[in-house]
Length: 371
Ligand SMILES: CC(C)(COP(=O)(O)OP(=O)(O)OC[C@H]1O[C@@H](n2cnc3c(N)ncnc32)[C@H](O)[C@@H]1OP(=O)(O)O)[C@@H](O)C(=O)NCCC(=O)NCCS
Image 1 (tube, rainbow, N blue to C red):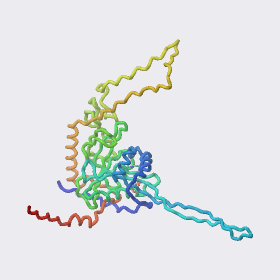
Image 2 (cartoon, helix red, strand yellow):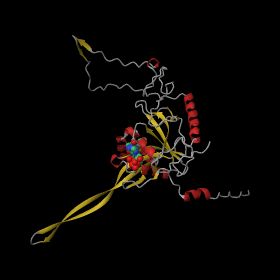
Image 3 (cartoon, rainbow, N blue to C red):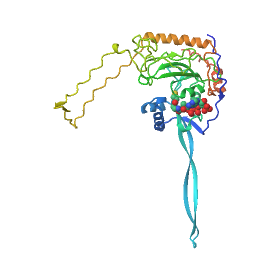
């Protein structure tokens, strides 16, 4: 396989953010901020319960961007100038102080699918008033910088229908693959990935052939974006349990499967019988419901957990085969995947760091001690 000679050299070095912003690791007291901002953008970033957000903070997987807002205090002092005349004046003391104000955050890890060389961004979010100020770009670069030495790629999943895809593109990520989103929403998720080391043009890209956990909580096959297709183009929605060609209905008809649609009606299980309602008493055309005892709460029928739909292992094996062949193909063709980055956010590994790795002489084993 020949090396992939693709670079994002046309990308400009990342300028300083357009607002005065500092990046720091998240702490537990940031959780209300993270939660309120994710609630503002659930369509874009999904939703993590508070416990999960706390876990991410404790695992050191959260970065917070904050600005320093200057506030003033004012103390009025009345001073009598001329006691006899009763003349007095006010002297106003003003002092200013800085209040750090969080304006964005990133949740990410430098490992994905138990791979030490691939990191993932779970969420990135900036308050609306601070958008297009390079806050997110600065957060992203900081995440790359703090990652373990061996981490060479970063990825993220992004719903196809949101603006953020343009951000990933501008950051030099390439759209590699797609999967169906959750059943209810019927969206497609795009898998973006980027090499994070400055000047790296050879680390092979990678994506999982199947995902099972995460926000969808159900198996999804992952397919490469077919050659010639743009990430914006319509992609087939493939859900587990629909034993058909991608985009086709389970009844063999050629109509594309609709978002969230399962097998055709005939093959579906009969709907569970609804519990019979207590019969209303009829009286000359009027009907009266039985008396309601306000003290007795109607028992809620226990909802059985929805069984997780699993992918057919044969399809998973086929998706894996397709992934590996496709990756081999694009890695052999330098024009296949060209990053369209506007800014260069790669991580520059410092010389000392490199030198330590390259030059440290192996320690000699101590000579064996004679018994
Ligand atoms: C996506 C998001 C994080 C970007 O944050 P941001 O701080 O505004 O991004 P930056 O200022 O760092 O943008 C850097 C570059 O990305 C590109 N970009 C960012 N947002 C863009 C948009 N809405 N449309 C087009 N390009 C965009 C631009 O090229 C921009 O540089 P420029 O302003 O010099 O043209 C922000 O819009 C956001 O919080 N959205 C809601 C949550 C979300 O969608 N998260 C991502 C889920 S996958």
